[in-house]
Image (cartoon, rainbow, N blue to C red):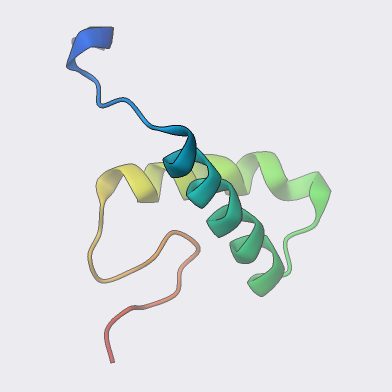
Length: 64
C-alpha cells in the first residue's frame, strides 16, 4: 500500500455503528450464516470502500 495512515479517512463511532447495522441487515437479507461472516464482511467492506452509487453493500440495488 502506498497510502499512509494520515491519508486515510477516519470513521466516527456513528459511522462504525451505521456500518455494523448495515452489515447485520445484509447478513439477514442474504441469509448469511455465522460461518460465512468473515468472507461476507470482506466483500461488504470492499464494496463500501468502492462507493458504488448503484448498489448498497450487500448487493441491494438503489436504482429502480
